[in-house]
Image 1 (cartoon, helix red, strand yellow):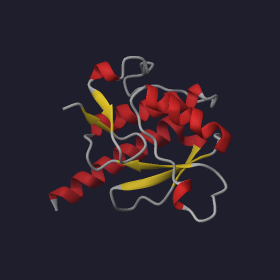
Image 2: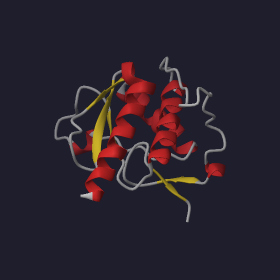
Image 3: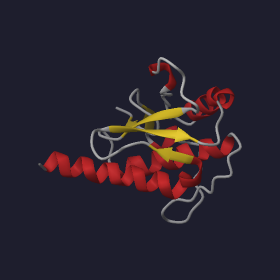
Image 4: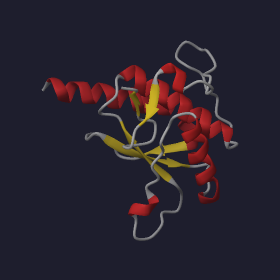
Length: 143
């Protein structure tokens, strides 16, 4: 039961940060349970997706598009967001970085941390984060 409560808390942190930072630019797929969900990008075309993913990689995020898992490509790009292995603080920071990446490809996103400070993309690695292989906005501490 304790694990379930923690997953709910982490999921809530991820969803709230996504809505706060990128709400008008994404649709969040079903997220009532589990350890990951999908966000659908409203303002990123499939042509913009690779530059977006490459920019994210340059700041320490590995983004996993979902369209390769579809028999027929969906109407717009989506990303898998995993949250189970991260603390709430790591999730919030990762989603702030994700919003910065969205802004970098031309989406009019206002990226503000909970402390109302502009989030700096530069130096993400210096803050001790490295990209994981499980999902968009999922970072793991360097070992």
